[in-house]
Image (tube, rainbow, N blue to C red; front, side, top):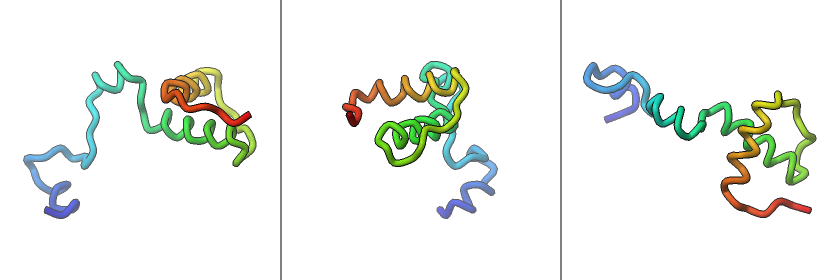
Length: 74
């Protein structure tokens, strides 16, 4: 079944990819947090200049990256 057919089918969720609110609340993993984590990773690695994050955004992104346990560049 094509994606368009899935979206138009009445018996399937309207979103092709669906994450429950309960899971999002437990993990704190949102698309925004993932994008911020990617930006923070790129800045830590020296690929891009450090961006502007609110403290809350920075802490969420840093927690996601640090949870992976990968070493940072010196």
